[in-house]
Image (cartoon, rainbow, N blue to C red; front, side, top):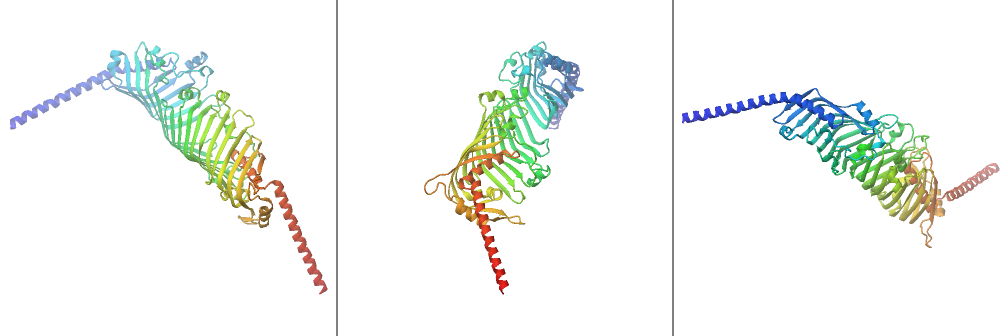
Length: 596
């Protein structure tokens, strides 16, 4: 038995020795091939980059490692550099691209480049090209001669590599943790944006005799996948942070999704304007889900124009607050309606349809003393906005942006509203119409009490219809306010205190002489209120549409300027009679004292 065990041991020893010999031989052979292939590999890579880019770019690197057996190689200290002289010549001959790239990275790894196919069939097939922590700088300059350029090259890159290769195919190109700088050279001064921690995957890049004519490919690629996590950006005015947790995009589907998007003000509601020294609308945005479909990536890459068939915003909030304790900045806000700002955007934008679902919208103001805040809320807003664009070609076909929205006003009444914006109007022309049904009047106290000094004691709104046409200077239209059992209190600030008190006599006279308790009245007469309101230069879009609508509501219940003037005159007359009576009593008392 011992002899047999010894034989088995000897066999294992010889087998291990044979394996070691083979491993050492293969290692030596691999090193030999690597040393032999290294200069060939280096020369071919540099030559291929020049040929494939028509001499616009060259590649430089400090070192190259090649393993012919495993098909793994890498380049270190890589730079892809544009030749500015070639670029200038391409501009002169109207062949230059709109984007010029500068790329630097510590390491470029190549996985499985299949040497046998390269030697035997002249096919360079690479499974993975990995750019680890690259720095990419893209300089954009728009050229008219590229306006109608297709995402397929006019001359196939195959023409440049055909004398060396029959096929160049890379299954995956990965840019991991890339830092990306975008330089816009289309204005008087360059505009620079930068992003870090960006992941980009380019899929199925192919150069052969047919790939340039394949319309399913975008710049010879089957797909471009982009991922960006935990992004944060400070706006140039230092008033806001723009943040989101995750962005994912795939060019093959044209779908882009953004998770947990936020526009965060740097300062709280009271401090926001104080740091500026004047009143300014403070915006706060929180959206859980934003999605786009039908994005045209070639159009964005080529001309920096954003086009999408559809956009969806779901589960979020928009809050606007203004602090009236601060002085109004002497600035003309004409030309700053939403559709006017859209037309002033630097880059072209076009979204055929915008869907909104479950978004809470609110507008609030502090009163002049800053102790009370009035707020109007539009809860669980949903609907669509169509033709969101500043593209002249699109506006020729349709120059109206239209919004059809439904909401719960103050969490009580059902509100349906239609906005129609004229995208070509120089005076900011737009209209808004809609109706509100089935709402308790007391729900409006959150806005009317602190800002209108009017409190609803009772009342039920059956219907509020409005149709108002507005522009930069005025709003004109009509309001129909149908209600029943309306009673209000007129308020004023308590002298030396931060609270509101009821004006007893004014409220009594208002309810008795002015306020219509029912509209229509007992005889079925329905009062319609005209709206004509001039816009203050400092009034924002939200402020203007609310104040114009509130004017119609006040006039509907009888609180017109004329009626308010009449009741003030009656109160003044009453106060005068009261004072005269007290004066007569005083004189009578004085006469009695003299007689005594």
